[in-house]
Length: 110
Image (cartoon, rainbow, N blue to C red):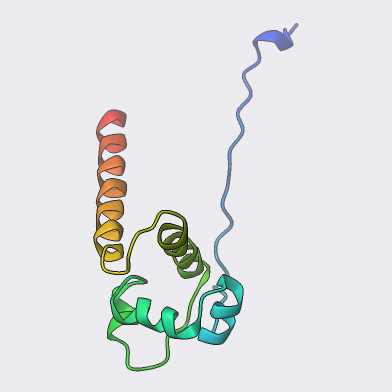
């Protein structure tokens, strides 16, 4: 006879495979984020939204991750008073912190 009090239960979170990413034009991204298209293009030129957008000659397209980054950048700029010149530095520091956190997690799990 089994006792339900001692039965272990596990839940597994599964992220469905991406079938296709949704891509947005500059106009649509501007509308969705509330950021003027010229400012979005500036963010692309200075590399805040990835090197591929900074070096591309074509008009940039944005995915959901890029829209998230734009919202994060705008929060820093509007609500935290970070100026445009400091944003690349903060982006680099944030990415380095994320990389170091992943490394620490990896080393703890060994």
